[in-house]
Each structure stands twice: as structure tokens, then as C-alpha cells.
Image (cartoon, rainbow, N blue to C red):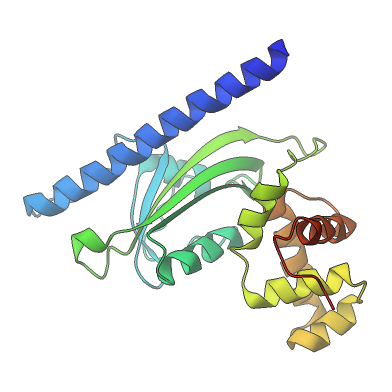
Length: 232
């Protein structure tokens, strides 16, 4: 019980500090936009990874913490963050009209180390500049050893991640749960078997899973809890 209380307390502290960090970044950007000073928005004072993307997903502003964590200290200006497709799915949710989205997920840093991340994405409609489309604040929660099991997400957390997947990924998950082969799945969604394998591995990482059979178990649990429709 004591250990559980310590874990709950640590989670609450993290949530409060991350909420505060998000608020500070958003307020700083909105104040900069209202000032019309012509200066660049100052993102350097934030210790979390902060960057801004345009509608195409290319990075237009970044801070040092982001460059150090995901680009070996190099700039990513003018390029998309392609190290993890989870970010692409989060962008898609925002571009479809959601004002913001936040989730925990797993990715690799610039050195290839697996890490747990807390990511918050938000539309920047108030700035009224098409170049300033999406604000991203990402906090590295910790690093995982290669031999260490990825922290298991709760079913609700997995469902939240599952909802960021596109229709093709949903179909792949359903067909995996139905026991279909990689070749049959590839034919059904008009992709190569290599693409299916890549998508499957990316989804496993995002869901905090390690083996395809765990996707089967997750899909069954989602159905049992009526979070998704039952397969025919």
C-alpha cells in the first residue's frame, strides 16, 4: 500500500508540473502573438521539448531541449519529425478539428534509446498565421533498458492510442485478431508485407506491447468492454 501511495503521489506531481509547463508555453506564445514585436518566440527557457509545426507537419520553431533529445543537437527546421509515426497520428487528430490531444507513448530519442514520453499537441488558431498550426510539448518520462519490459498501458490508455490510428491500422489490428496472415492482411489493405510488418511494430510500440499475440488479447478486451464493435 505504501509503494502504491508513493507511485500515485509521483503521478499526481508529474501531472501538475506538466499541466503547468503546457500552460506556460501556450501563454508565452499567445503573448508573443499579441505583442507584434517582430521578434522570434522565445522557446529556449522551457526545459521540456517544445516545437511548432505547420499544416504539412514540418517543424518551423524549436527549442534546444527538443534538438538535443531528438536531433543530436542539430536543427529540425523545415523537416518533419519522422522518428515515430505516433506523432503523425496525433497531428492527424488535430488537423481533423480536435483542439488538443495528450497521451503517453513510447519512442526512440536521437541516440536510439527507447523512452516513455508524455506528449501534448494543440491547435494554434488564435495566432491566425497558417504557418503556426500545431504546438507540441513533449516530456521525456524516462528511459527503458533494451531488456526491460515496456510499461503496460491500461486498457483505457490503449484505447486512447488505438483511436489515434488510421482506418488501415484499425483493419490491420482486426485482421491480426482474426488470425489472418501478414500476406492476407497486405492484400486486403493494398500494401506490401514489409509495410504491414513496419506498421505492426509501430503499433506495438505505441500500445506498449511486445508481441502480435498481445494485439489479439487487447482487441478481445476492447470488444468485451464494448469499446469497439464485435467482429463478425
